[in-house]
Amino acid sequence: MATFSSKLPQTGVTIFTVMSQLAQAHQAINLSQGFPNFDGDARLIRWVEEGMQKGFNQYAPMAGLPALRTQIARWADHFYGASLDPDQEITVTAGATEALMCSMLALIHPGDEVIVFEPAYDAYIPAIQLAGGTPVRIEMRPPDYAFDWEAVRQKISPQTKAILVNSPHNPSGTIWQKEDLEELTQIALAHD
Image (cartoon, rainbow, N blue to C red; front, side, top):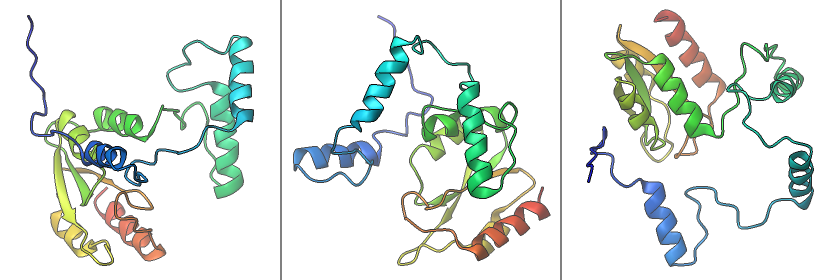
């Protein structure tokens, strides 16, 4: 019988798995993972069925269906004034974790550093490590979980390749303010 060893043996069970098991065991609302407690909209189910009946049931192109990427570009332009090329600047993934993993594997090389604000979504550190990078942790402290931009300036180095950000921050819920975006922009421009 073949044996396999994990590239990330220290990762273990994620907090999302633990919280989902506890929610199920205690019949509690699961706020840790965003599981809906309702069925999908009947119209969506009907549209999916109609699409499959019309033959839209095969693998999509790796970047996503061109018609979907075009609609995403239109949406981004309408809501954000962002002019994006659907063929060169938009990729559709099955979810955020897949997008994160693909990004880290494509962009991070051995020796690269990636700044992560902690507490952090539990897929960040393993994605960085699988890509051969080194996570550089910056702690967000309660009660406000504000971003410590001075700590970022102190920890950024010539090996820093990326700073992982999301808003609202997962899991603290901190929402990026204009000042945060300005600080991040200044740091990113100063360090390429």
